[in-house]
Length: 129
Image (tube, rainbow, N blue to C red; front, side, top):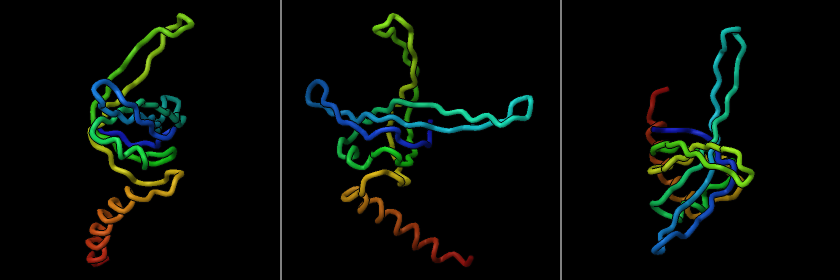
């Protein structure tokens, strides 16, 4: 499954058992549709995301960054300290594409992303229109 959205907070790295690291972040996606009355309805869905492949990506996953994520989604339910039931959506991320818009100036990660975009811009420059 793929989702596109903006980070709602900066990514955080946690160390779990056996020195494995996981990057945790939250993404909001927006959708709109017209209901039966013809009114436009806006809907925002929040995903709590986990990325296990490399903790280095946390430096460039900042609040407001537009990302496309590939992975699998699953629902979770729990009972809060107040005794009330809660539910949320988790997204186990296997691939991250950055589209920019974060709040921090990106250094090392931007260099690689820029180089990747440079080749696509060169191809676009060759187009006749």
